[in-house]
Image (cartoon, rainbow, N blue to C red):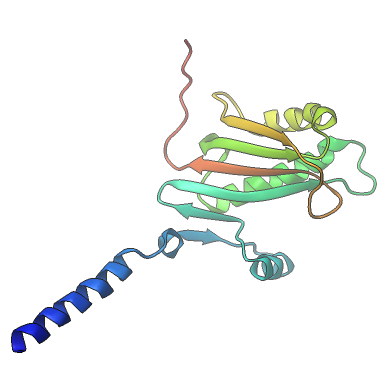
Length: 163
């Protein structure tokens, strides 16, 4: 009987330890939240972060570029979005040189590409990250024109490969 109790205790301990060992990736991650109280309230209400660092990988949530009254062109909206992305990367310990993948979602891809490329090229230099641009119907907020999300790798440093 004593041996059976010891075996049951050992099994229970193994089950508990395996649950602890399989904690979610976010439990060990560095979560980047906004400093602005209004932005923080919105992120917490909707349940997402500005970015999350898991190991050496930084996943940056989408940042929406929106035109403001008085903007002379689309580049003003993209510059604000890229500045916000720059600030998030910095808080995560990264820079544009660490970005390995960019995905952008556009409400009018053909019209918006020249402006986003002009702004992107002020922040992103060769060797360039992978980039996927996708046409969509709409964004939240309603005045959003493009949403940009990033993936960065810390401490890697991209090297060009020419073939």
